[in-house]
Amino acid sequence: MTSGLSLFGNAMHRSVNGLLGYEGVEVINPEGGKEDAEEEAHRGRWKQEAFLQLMEYSYLLDRADECEDPYLRLVYASSWAISVYYAYQRTWKPFNPIIGETYELVNHEGITFISEQVSHHPPMSAGHAENEHFTYDVTSKLKTKFLGNSLDVYPVGRTRVTLKRDGVVLDLVPPPTKVNNLIFGRTWVDSPGEMIMTNLTTGDKVVLYFQPCGWFGAGRYEVDGYVYNAAEEPKILMTGKWNESMSYQPCDMEGEPLQGTESKEVWHVADTPKNDKFQFTYFAHKINSFDTAPKKLLASDSRLRPDRFALEKGDLSKADEISATPWGDLEIYRFNGKYTEHRATVDSSDGIDEVDLASIEFNPWHFSSNMLPFSILLK
Image (cartoon, rainbow, N blue to C red; front, top):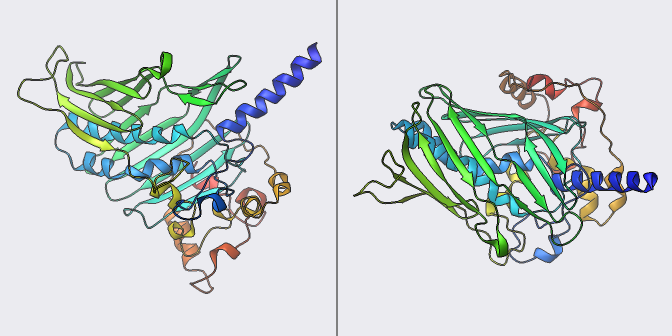
C-alpha cells in the first residue's frame, strides 16, 4: 500500500510540474493559425514565454510613467499586471526548462528583455525588461500544495517595476493560483484572492480581488478593487474581467462612484487570429519566431532548443536528451546592468552579421566551461 501511494505521489508530482511548465511539452500553434493551424499545432512552447507575455501590454507601464496623477498611475500599472492572466486559460504543458536557458526579445516597443532559468530544484526563473519608461525585474518561484484533485500554487518570488521619470518603485504581490481537475475532468486554472501593488515610494497601493469561480462558472474572471492613498482611503474603483478588460472610475470615501463621473476602460485583451484554437494573441504567436530575436543570437536562447525542433518533426525521443542540474540556492536574482555590455560584445564579435539563426546550435551557458554563465549578469 505504501509503495502504491509513493508511486501515485511521484506520478502526481510529475503531472503537476508538467502543468506548471517544468516537465513535458505544450502542443499549440505558435505561428498564428491563420491557414495551417492544424499542421503547426505540433510545435512547442517554453516556460520563459510566460514572463514575456507581460510585455504585450507594456504601453500601460509607459502611460503609468507619463501619468501625473499618482492614483491613475497605479490603475495603469495594475492593469498591466492583470493582462497576463488571459494566458492562464491555456493549460497545455511547455518544455521542461533547462538551467542556463535564456530568452531575449528585441523589436517590440523599444523594449529589451532577457530571462533565464536559474534553478531547477526548486524551479526558478529570473527576468529583466527595460525601455525608456520603465524597468521590470522578477524572480519567479512557487510553492505548491496538493489537494487531491486540485493544486494550490503560491507565488513566493519578487516582482518590481521602476518608473524612470520619477524613480517610483512598484512592488507586486500576485494572488495564489488554483489548478483544478488534475486527475478527473478537464483541467482549468483560477486565481481567487488578492493582488496587491504597492508604491514603495509614496505608500499608495491598489488592492484587487479576483473572484473565485462559483457553481456553473458564476463569478469566474471577475476582478474588482480600489486604489488607496497612503492613509488607506479609497480613491479609484476598478472593475473588470481578467480575460477581457479592466475599467476605472473615481470614487468617494465610501468606495462609491463619484457623481458626474463615468467608468473608463483602461485595458482590453488584444485580438486573436481568426479561427485560432489556442487563445493566442498575435503577439503570443510572434514570440516563438526569430523575428523578435537579436541578429546575433545567444546559443542558450530558447528558440534554438533541439527538442522543440524535434517535436516539429514528430521525434518525441529528443525531449529527454537535455537534462538540468542544480544551480545554487539564491532567493532573489537582481539585474546588475551588465547585460548591455555583454550584448555589445556579442554584437561586435567577428562574423557575418546576417546568419541563419535557426542554424545556431543550442548551448545553455551552464553547460559550457568557456562561457560566462548568464546568471552572473542577473545576480
